Image 1 (cartoon, rainbow, N blue to C red):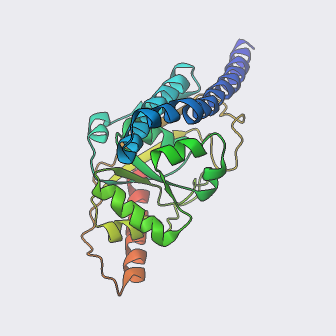
Image 2 (spheres, rainbow, N blue to C red):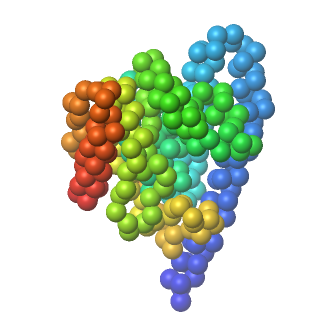
Length: 261
């Protein structure tokens, strides 16, 4: 009886705390959009410097958000290889995508991070100001996307990409799209692979935020033990074949690495 009461109390607390955390996230996005970023724009005329400052601001805000979720007991975070992740420069960061907060955690630990975001988020009132101020890349125009990714990496940014394209479904095999492979081939950039696990599954695709796990979830993130190496040169007359081959190689590699965690 006592164990049941404790379990129900813990579940209710996590639902409440999750709501508080995401409310803070949304309000924080509005404050950044309406106050912080406009102030930074006034104080700094150079566009690139403004973007870098905005990204640094988002980095520390996301770090705060992850800490808030951790210390309120919503999710327990275990982030390995923090020093290596913080020191990445000019890398294509590829990660699997089991939960809603994956990109938030990645940006909180990777400095100078850039990322590709879905076009519809530019219409989200809580996120559009953040996305525009940081210069994160829209996936709306495929050809323009490749040019922007190439330009970003050449500046030393770390470009975060989820090869799955969207959150994976629990208990299903990974299925990668060709976008990440196209970028890797076109930009000819070193790849850093990051493995993410959420146990039990929560904040998955199609699951509302308030449907929390029956017990506290644990989020783990680390660099893969053996980094993926692709020495394929970009050949303009066979990009589709190269992209398909690289995509299959990445999918097999991630599947194997995740199974060993």
